[in-house]
Amino acid sequence: MENNKVGTYNFVAEPFHVDFNGQLTMGVLGNHLLNCAGFHANDRGFGIASLNEENYTWVLSRLAIELEDMPYQYEDFSIQTWVENVYRLFTDRNFALINKDGKTIGYARSVWAMISLTTRKPADLLSMHGGNIVDYICDKDCPIEKPSRIKVGSDKVASSHTARYSDIDINGHVNSIRYIEHILDLFPIEYYKTMRIRRFEIAYVAESYYGDELNFYKEEVNPGEYNIEVKKSSGEVVCRGKVLFI
Image (cartoon, rainbow, N blue to C red; front, side, top):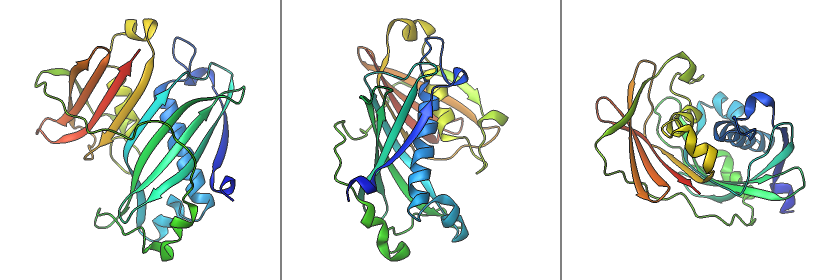
């Protein structure tokens, strides 16, 4: 029964999905994770398409990814996803990344909210559809730490970016994956030549839109471990991130 609660989805690391090392990029992996969450929810009756008919949608709040390795160009791999917990306003969804040999090479934890498209306020998950989302809670292990509380003490702007056409998604705001890509662009290519990302975290705070000036603040809190904060020019925090290189 527990196995029926886990969705497994197969992929190939396409040439345009890998970086100069020939490995899948974090941005593409993030996209795949979000797609798998959508597939899994849709197959069980609480996907975005059906929710939109009721004027609701899912919003990603937090994501933490921990990796031992990444798939290489042309390699087959799969992603498993399952619901770990359901609370009144949030749900925890986990993922496992499995390589071509069937070995688990990474895990991810995510936190989601369901919001009203009218009020932009969270919905009560335990009252939606009779609360049947709890039927899909699965007791499958995800042996990585939950997303942490990220604080950035630096007030020095490391980089700035004006949100453009390629940043904007179907909801009219900056795509959640684009923040991941912009954060990873804060580091020189030498980092990616000599190290790999062991853990990546992002916490979304507010939406940003076309034309917004985004300022990125970066602080090294431990050797190879960086906390990131993204703010609008008004000072409003948009998201926070953490990157751990090893």
